[in-house]
Amino acid sequence: MIFYTADLHLGHKNVIRLCDRPFANVEEMDATLIANWNAVVGAEDIVYVLGDFSFRSAGSVKPVLKALNGTKHLILGNHDKSWMKNVRAEEYFASVSPLLEIDDGDTHITLCHYPMLSWNRVMHGAIHIHGHIHNNTNYSFGLLEKMSAYNAGVDVNGFKPVTLEQLINNKAAFYSQVAEKDMANKIASMTEKDVASITENAAAKKIVDALKPLAEHMSFLCRQAISHYTPIAERIIRGEISDEKEIDLTLTYMLDHCYDKEMFALFKRVCRALLYKYPELVHFYIHEYKYMWDSDGDADDETDETE
Image (tube, rainbow, N blue to C red; front, top):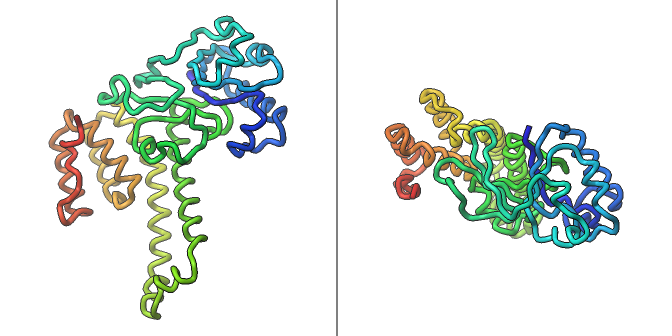
């Protein structure tokens, strides 16, 4: 089995504070990361470490490298130079490189520590796995959300190596959590004047109160739909699902929730991936989207976004 991980920062005390890691000290952090690794990775498994394995460690990383299960490949990060001064990485890693292209099943993947805007075969369903940004939601966050790029960092993957399927699911869950926190922060920061402007009269307040449960229910259903259809959509994009009836049914259900930006972005990615294989089907759903959600006809034309 193939696993991916990044940004362990073993031995780095300050990363606990900087990334809000749930550890009392660096000893607890290192012990947990090692235990988590060996709990999921077996001797015959392969692990791609996408950089920043250790940083500012007071001790040698050699015992850690010896203790970790699996055949390990290192994709160099910006903080790997320090610990590699005293360790011959080639003795512990099957390969060491700044960038690597591999196949995981039918999925072609470009591995690099740093998130990239484009990569080889991106228009043919290839994906990108990276590290570097930890759980930071400021750096290119909105852009990465819409791309077939996945953050292998331990901070967003339960502090353990994960499979490709887990990586994809964890990304969807992480972005959903961020959206919920952002909405909660906006509500908490509202002033009395803000609230008054929204409900400036009794009639408006009644409408808001009446619509609130419906909005909450729609949001709940949408989050469930995104969670359910994201892995299916990714399989369609990678070409693992090619049955036209199944694709048609999936697009139908996704279309019902395209009022949501995240679902609409996923819907567009599927349409792009299928444009040349099923042009009639894609153009049908573009038309249906405009009819349902863009009555002014201002929606982006997918045929202009596939180059």
